[in-house]
Image (tube, rainbow, N blue to C red; front, side, top):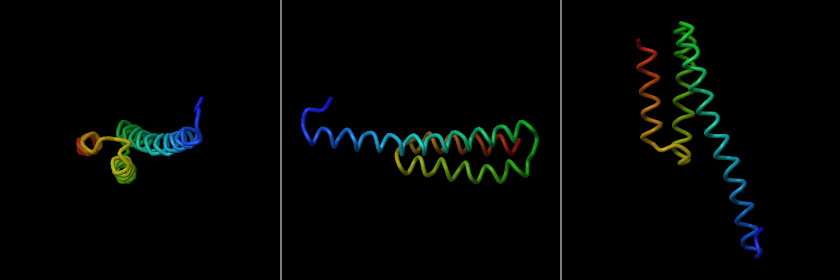
Length: 85
């Protein structure tokens, strides 16, 4: 447990940031899963719409430094490649 007021505040801030980061990470992960599921099911038109949302979620996560920018770019590339197949 924190011993000082500043340590208490730091703990609160850390907890709050963690919640925000997890939401961004979960949104990106869920969007990617949705695209992969649609591609696997063979629904190209729905997958094309979902890929836009996934790329946006990945970009937002990278912008907030929840995901590394190269990791986000790699995942976007993989999704686009899978959709084109």
